[in-house]
Image (cartoon, rainbow, N blue to C red; front, top):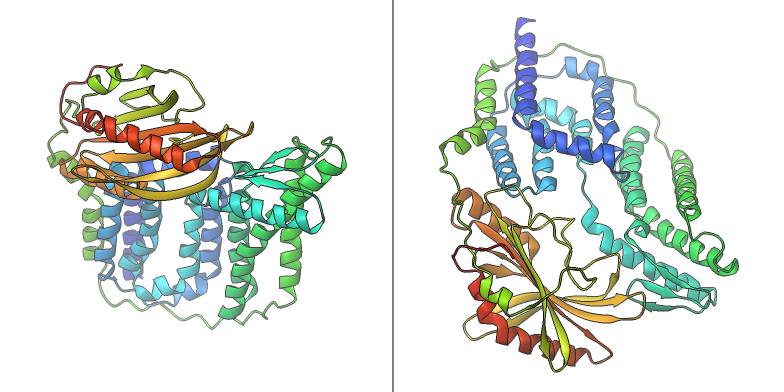
Length: 492
């Protein structure tokens, strides 16, 4: 009994140090649960997981206890991932790393047999991590595709331009709130739990989980079609305001009820629990406790040993600023917050305004360059008609840019090119830039990040718009490179 108590103390001590070491990250998850309707279910995930563990209490009492030292490299890797992600405030990665530490700590303190027994309750904790926002653009396009197909099938004329759908009755936008991300996340979280509690067959569990992914996506497209149909039939008097949100949740609730009701016909009979034995203790847990705590304290030790980051900005925007006709507010500008320095203005080429924007971020603070809040274009005014990556060739280097063909509600078209920087390294890939920023901040070889955007309005000649941007960028490239050079910056 004393040995069992030592294991209980070990896992309790590891969880306490986990809670204290990563309290800021854990609180950042809780804050999102409390303020976001999309992730409000996260509040319930830990209680559900604890309940699922409690249901296995007899099996837990009969499980062999032995420290799992093979978990140490994985724990070290997760702590390292958290450290780099936390350095550049990539919350989803740092939160995911922290949650994944919990099953690893169980493995370390109690052994592989315990981890295998509790694999689902511990894996279910992943639903506590607020993630999935990157699926919104894909879901918007799928919803628009389904809506257009359904409207055409019912012989309602529709013209699609990006995410705008025009019918004889009115103009509809498949906005971010219409993507169905809330329905999808809720369906997957509920469906996975239902499959675990209802089926013992792995095949049935897999089929139901796939249904919990596919059905809400299709249902959301049908929901969007229903909104357009009702609005068209009532001359835009219904289903265009808050009532379409209420209708959406009622429709989703009905779909979930039907899915669970049908799934119940295939439920497996619960198996009788095996007779509980007694736990077998093979080795002492104290070394695993010491090693686990030591690994979790490594970030604190590294922060104490590393020298401070340089305070002097490593960019100089003066010449680039002077070449621009300044602009303060416009729907043509990106939306970036908390930058150390930003530039916004226009250049003239062939009587056309070439819009330019740049933002710089110092690594001496916790402000984020790549985040959900920092957008290359204002999503309230623009939707994407096409999106692709291109490589431009300059005199001494190649530059990869992201090209976005944008549409506004009034029919305006705008071609946008943008890219990011980490020190002197430039790329259109935000994930690569974020990784470079993390390495740069931790290892001190790059201490600032940057964002650049150039765009032009056009009528119908997309190749001409590309030519204008290419020519302007070719001319202004030395100024852009110069802005990324070391020097003392003066705030615009």
